[in-house]
Image 1 (cartoon, rainbow, N blue to C red):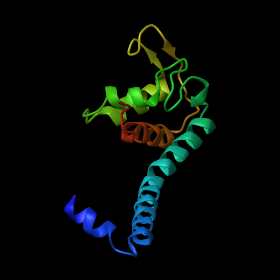
Image 2: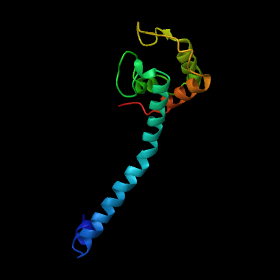
Image 3: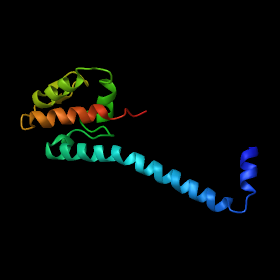
Image 4: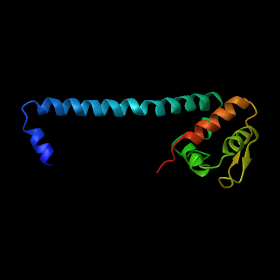
Length: 125
């Protein structure tokens, strides 16, 4: 508190505080951009491979939201392979009675990339 009181009594402190606040805000904005860029890439892949018919990143539709998938498989070293195979072959039982139809039109590379991007999401809290 003594430091702030001493700092606040300086005649140029208002401009300096605004500048520091702006720099902090700018730093936060710039540091979050890569996460949004990754989500944009994931959304592009989801749209081009028809994933959004049943899934969303942050909301439940017919299938689980991708944040739930990331949370469920966190720490599983074989998860990328499991999810890529599930995307291609479909399946049931992991999320209840719902059935995920096979998606053979999804390339192996896209299935692996989608799985990696889903698993890189930070689970919702």
